Amino acid sequence: MRIPFLLVTFVWFSTSQASKQCKDLIRQCQSRMAVWTRCYEDESATCTTGRLFSPDFTRMIVNSSQQADVRLVEHRVQIPSSALRMSRGTVPEENVVLVASVINSTHFTLSPSRGQGRARGRGRQLHPPAPRQATVLDGLVLAVRAGNLPVKNLSEPIRLFFKHNKQVNGTCVFWEESQDGTGDWSRVGCSTTINRYEFICSCDHLSFFAVLVNPELSVDKRHAVNLSYITYIGSGLSVIFTFISLIIYICLHRRRPEKAISVHMQLTGALLCLHLSFLLCCLWVWLQSDNEDSWVCRVLGLLLHWSLLATFSWTALEGFHLYLLLVRVFNIYVRRYLLKLSLVGWGFPTLVAGVCGISGVYGRYTLELKYGNNNKTTAEICWMSSQFPQMLLVSYITTVAFPCLVVLYNSCMLGLVVFKLCGLRGGKRGFERGSDWRKTNREDRSRLWKDCATLLGLSWVLGLPWALASTTYVSLPGIYAFTIFNSLQGVLVFLWSLALTCKSQSDNNSSVRDPSSQKMMTTSLNN
Image (cartoon, rainbow, N blue to C red; front, top):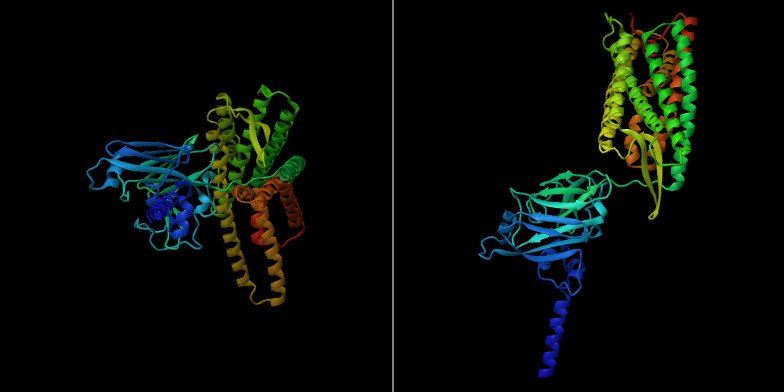
């Protein structure tokens, strides 16, 4: 009877040890209970790692009186001594068991809806959760556990380092699990610092940590070629139609010298320079076989940057001119008004481009494009040099922050136009209540179409299609919409110039004018 007893004991011991293999710990914990993270934290301190070294799992005994540094393949953890002392509580033993492991993010299931209850034992509410459209960086979660007691509300934070190989925006989060095993990523108690190579998370507790980044929108080769054709054809058409628009504005200005037409003329000239310089920058890089920066490429890059800044400057001045017309209608006199606008519209871009040119910002810009998993290609243009150390900072300030401010300001101006139109239309209806209601309805519909056309034209002139840049980060149709509308902006400005021409002719042939549309279409200021 002794041999069977020993055999049963050996089998039980082997099974018990096998059940505690670290590589199978997640699967076993998920099969035993819904809230598997509790089981994982408890069992990871005693599971068997086996003979083979695992780069994603480390367990060590550290002294709680000193800071602990843990290194994994793509991650690092720095735990202050105060956190280690909290993890051992009142136990006199200074050594504590520290476990750090990397887990695939697919093991973490998001709740169907954001919960309002409390998370698992940490006393934190599932609020505010991180954005759900974001994805986990590289699909990896860093789990850190120390001692036998929960570690939270630290005065000296724990620092976690997540490597990244591309410039992305991310947020440090930790996992808050509900009673049914699902949960949410939360930012409470964690702050994020980003440098060129790492995300640095500073958190006041131990948990399962990750970095959420915006989902990467990939464009395959077929769509990239289509977008390139749309860009080149649209810019070519814009060059032609902005040149025609410039001629139309010159003729209009000779017939009816108004400040608004002069402002339109300056904006059209800036757009012409923008699309022409863009095509020249692309053409020059295509003609050059070597990868060295030539002085021609640097000059073209400066011209492209200057044209872009000038376009947004005159777009903002269009909004400013509209503000003067609608808000400060009476008793307006600005001495040398156009000269002052020109100093801003052309002087500011010249100053910025000159400083950037002296600093050596411009040159050949190289963008790496990925198709699928292994295919790579590059796109080049004469722009800001990729070798310039502060290229990203200069680009963000001058081509992201400045355009965003212009679009925001002009959006407010367009909202003011809508408000004024509604006020004018409401006042006019009060005078027409006694007339035939059928005739009034027909006139209302006609005015509605005119107002919509006016607002649509003003939106192009005010540069609002540039706001579509925000959609390029979330969807492929957004990329197409942004490319189409902004490459064809010169064509849209041409249509606006035709509308002004038709309005001018109709005003000359008719003695009755619609006061609201007249005010919007002939935006003028007296000398």
